[in-house]
Image 1: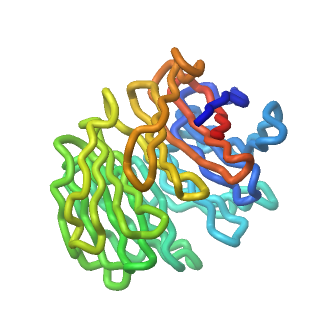
Image 2: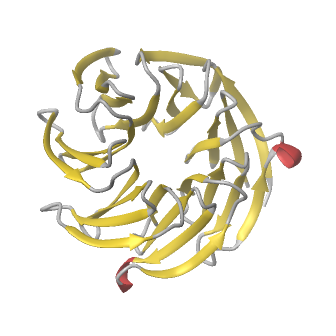
Length: 299
């Protein structure tokens, strides 16, 4: 496996916390502590387009599928709805006074992970909160949706993973998953496994069809693991960490394949916060507290 650093995108004035696809196939949005939401084109790395100024730091972005609306989770200020065609904020809703860590869609519902231990369920067409699900005493850090089993998983700073039914939002299972905060939950593309990572630097894999029994517990990094992402062809997955590194793993055997760091590949100088693996030339994108977004070609 060969790793080549293709480009570095610099435009943010502070830590970059999140990156998501813009669904064009070669573009993405980024946001962070400066409150800027920037749209980038992988073919034109020097031409970032500022699409919104959130006013406060942003941990979470989500794009409505098949729609022109970008959901922007402003810390302590609720959600802004950006019309990406007109480039204007059409709606705002102060659904919370706490941080917003994640936003995931399931049909016409949006699941919003909040810093006060609540998941807010919003009706997408009306942009209104339908339900508050109190899950933890501390922050809900991540949400993953499994359409195949009609479930969603949450990871929280109480060290737990909770599994809910998507129809009635009933709690189905609680997993005491990690010895510290759970930062990321992600279902495998086939929906058979749930991957969880956390501040304890462990990567854990759970068997969905075996009542979420533990499959593997890997001490994967030196410090907190912030995110996990799968390659477009599903053969690999990547993790990123507060230890400044990105690691690539075999999605079948869960074996480590490659490490991307400062010494080997001129990687990030501080915590790597989020990953995005695109179908455009199989490029992996990472963002960091060092204010930079790096693009990696994996071949």
